[in-house]
Length: 124
Image (cartoon, rainbow, N blue to C red; front, side):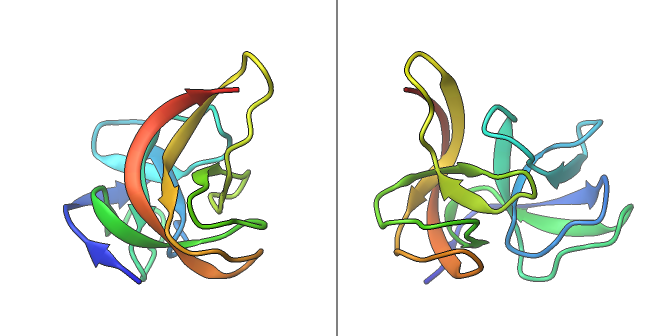
């Protein structure tokens, strides 16, 4: 299920895989895979991906398709694993985690699920 709203064309700061959680790149016009729950998450790559230096579409609003990096239950707040896959956010007590949004469907590692984009921060 997807219902993409706002998309922004950016430059891939490194190779970008389709349907991955992204963070800001080295400058204002680039994006790369997120690699931790502490990264400044900003969107999800489209269903095409891109080679380094190529323009590509980043979904920054609406419901986007995203690859899951583990067990996800609908309603989970999602963050990024080390390669940009969406995982359930579960910060330890007193620890902050950035989230990209809320899962719309349940799934497991490797599934393409849906995330309602709502970037923010939570604390365990």
